[in-house]
Length: 147
Image 1 (tube, one colour):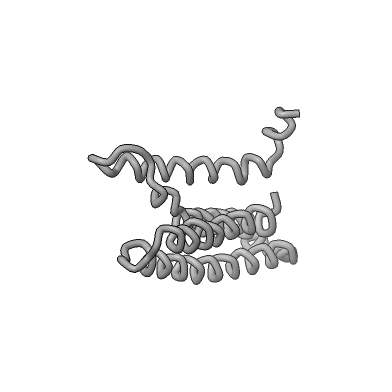
Image 2 (cartoon, one colour):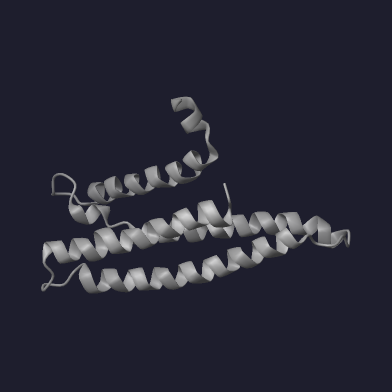
């Protein structure tokens, strides 16, 4: 049962980026020299998750372009699913980039201001911004790449 779960493509597709995002939180902790332990701010990973989804989409676009190259050279008709894949991936990249700008503005507004309470900052950056990034990552994996 556990082996079947680990062998499923969606587990690897979503689990590996999630593990690396959590390692990013540990990396933030290691960058701070004199403070002990992990802080809540180390887990504000919305920017990183959104960037991960954008980079995965670009890699997938290059994969689609590699499939397109021999078809163009041999003047073979291009299948509709390749067109649709490229169009949806390009649209995803645009939407994810706009979301990245929004998440960055949330961090700019909420991370280093004095008027924020801990709970309000956690809702905005820990729940909302992280949710945006993780939703983009999941949307790419399950709807664009269709693992």
